[in-house]
Image (cartoon, rainbow, N blue to C red):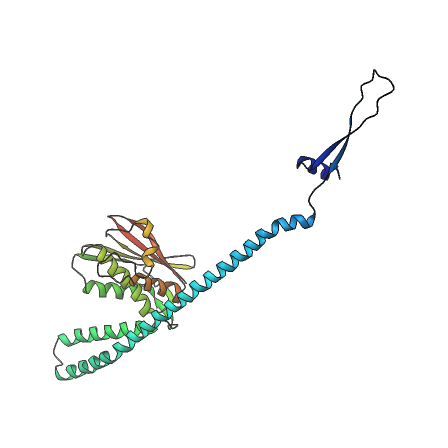
Length: 289
């Protein structure tokens, strides 16, 4: 009770009323005025009514945020459907001419078995077939199997080396023992190829690409480093956004596709580990074992 009285006094919820005092019989004694103190505070209902507008605003805010989130999710889902449809249609359109090229290659092999150009032609046709297969896998759950990640990266390094300038040096720093992980090799090769091609563009056809693989507890780490022009720190996240590109003729889809393959299909993580303008960039991929 004393605590409630003190609180009401501190809050200023007190009214003092001076009472008329009777004159004392002895005129030499000074009379002391008497006071009546009335303490009050708001009722529980009134306090609740004061808070009620804020509750209403909070509920309205949650409702608005829910609508915005639903609209954004719907837009993202529509973009994904367009992306998947475009990929599958591309694979479908590539299928017919690739099948024809494979048939003509077999005819050439029979008629000109000694021609050294035919094996190279066959490699390019097989490459086109692999590209069509990759596009067909976008939007559907790819088939996963145990692969040595080092072998996958070696294949990419060999392919990029044969199709890039002699001034581009690709260095591989891999463990001596196999690093096995469940993955879709065709799709993951696509990721590394995109990173390597972006690195070559960033280096203007001259420099070094370093592919590194190492393991930590529960994770396999793949890093792709270059000695190119670098990326500004405020673009570390936006480089993965669809349409973002620093090239005059680029579509800005390579890194977006790489992010989708790594994070959606392989449940991993890809990000810019470090970058310095004029010195180079390192992309890191983290995959769970």
